Image (cartoon, rainbow, N blue to C red; front, top):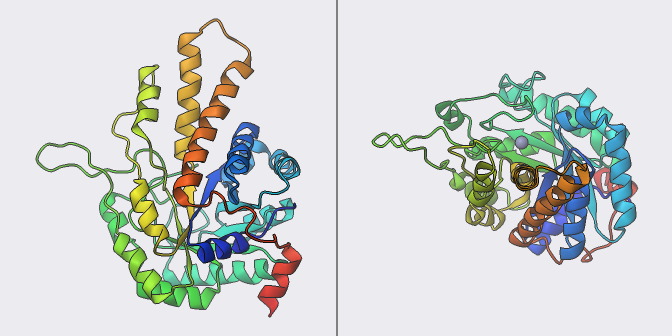
Length: 346
Ligand SMILES: [Zn+2]
């Protein structure tokens, strides 16, 4: 099965009332771990790469690895998605590489740091849709700004500023109508990375978990029941993974994630794509640290890459079950980009 348009995966998820994990990759082990987990749970899946990942993998390697993935597991629907595209040029690069879906993050300027005005966001996102849909390619846009910085991308807003940049449900309705996008990334107070909160208890100074504006998701879903929403920065940052890292020499204090309950609440209110990157990073790093600490005589990279791949796979398996995508890989006939072109043209 060739890569399928992400739009179909999201449409089917909406029909089935479940969410689909979108997992970031940089290398072979991560792709293999995702595919093994998808195969074992019979899950449709979204694999995504950031600009940083494209650079790291020198693009052509990523393309060939994805081809290998769909060849090895032909019955699993897989979409390949560009995470946080910053310009039409970057989008075009990804499409030329064979991606079936792109994110145009018009919430920020091309530098990936400065917040754009609403009008600028509408303009660039609409231009992305005009470029991608005639090719059958899915487009994700973002309204509002997320906290945290990933791969150098992100406004690096303070907690107060993040609160000022949450997605406005009324504006979201206008944004979707004006741009015609397929999926809307919402800012509800999540951040990228493992350190999700700068919130401190004013009395004790203790770092607190992030406050999420789930009501924004509920309101957007009420206004647009057919809009596919995307939650970014939605790693759960399991404390046992952080503890494993710290146990074997790591130093990661004060980490927080998004609870699976909050994500599941989102899924019952129109969230169809859940971005998870940090959790697999934590799992892999913990596994590698453990091997290094316990068996310092080992020097074959396979001795630590294999446990790292296995640890990442365990994360993916859990997320696929929790988001509800497990068991749905064969619910539908996968569409080609050609099929999707006809849908957009009609
Ligand atoms: Zn993101």
